[in-house]
Length: 155
Picture 1 (cartoon, helix red, strand yellow):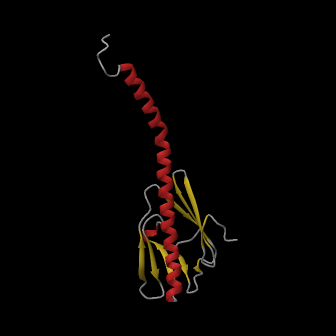
Picture 2: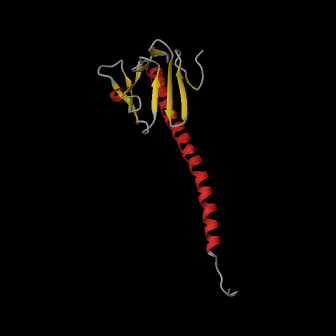
Picture 3: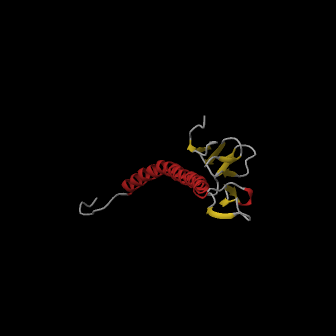
């Protein structure tokens, strides 16, 4: 072999490529999990902010506000409305969740209403909202006094 030739041999390139592919194969699942975790945190945070906004507007304005899904699906757009006026005045619209995400609420809950003191006006029991996206899961609890707890217990 000519000692003046510089470069890599085919074997060296294949070994480097194999190591690179092994590293990529290990990194992709961790990256996907990280993206799902971030998306779950963001969407649960958006839902929590919408509920907090509804509660604070009820207190500030001395009215009854309601968080209601547009079209009946809690993963779609949500509206925060002043239901003490006729017709209901929409105060804020919360964007839909990402595809693949699901929300499960306490059985029979079609809307969440806050009274002028910030407590739950309807339903008459605490509401548990469970968010799921892939392997990620979060639980929000809306207590009778209106407190919104991430992963907490109303007890």
